[in-house]
Image (spheres, rainbow, N blue to C red):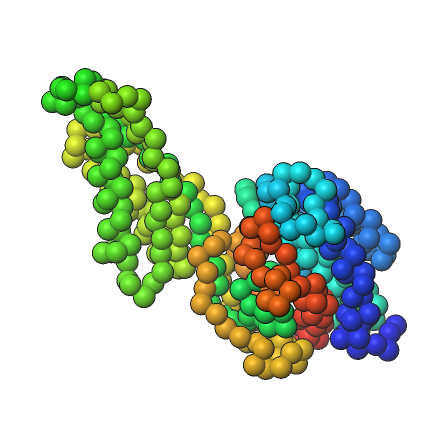
Length: 393
Ligand SMILES: [Zn+2]
Ligand SMILES: [Zn+2]
């Protein structure tokens, strides 16, 4: 029982959420190695009276808050992993683990969700239904959302809606990006191995030059996005590595090309995957070589359900001034919240976290990344209110 509003409850947890965030920040762990983080999360949930399920997809943690009356189930998700970077911020709470750093803000996400658990437990008697708290590993790769779903996170009880947030230094603290439709791109990798015939650099007619054919493939791949995709539909094909050859006067028999594929529509994603394979194999064939083309599918497009986004916006507009609830162009980075959003409708929200005066505005994944912790109570309030309002509908 509590007489506090959700806003007051979130503000009352300000010091605690900052302390939690700084604890995680000092102790970053890479994907699927979030053992200490998961143990901290599990212990805190237990202290709140929530018996956590641990070791889900290795290091994932799930907590259930069963409300006073039966109803729907809403999933709230936070990612817990850090990045392989050495921190250069010089902050008092900087990473104490060389080679690992919370440079994407996932320390903030985990701290926010832990404190959401506290706010919701205080108001358990007014909850109609169930809140499923999901602390997931390895968002930065290879991805913890999919194995958690495969482990049954969307069932028992069946999840009706899911919400999550990501801090974003593109926007100032106090703003919220809430919108329907595609928010982040899909990400897939391709690996092309061109097999020609090696020979003497002075006798090309006796060889099949894998470098010349690999270069032709790179050029042809550039025409997929520029000539075959609607210019208003964002897509990217990047060849990020090209390895072949050993010496000036030897014709290389093999070339290996690796790259990334991004799209904002599932149909475009499938089209790019298909055309890369067709072009690579057919350019090689036309040049008397072969090409083994492999696509590794990673994360789908992150798509917010329009009705859920409208609902989230109505909640957000009561927490901050309506003009602080903004929309922004989608980004071509990928996010495995997409798997949850494909399994149940929901909305992923960007929580503005930059403070230009305090120079807390370096880009994510920079060794100088840090954010304004004033965004944390707003994050607590937002996720708590989304869960309460969704279940109360
Ligand atoms: Zn990241
Ligand atoms: Zn991230």
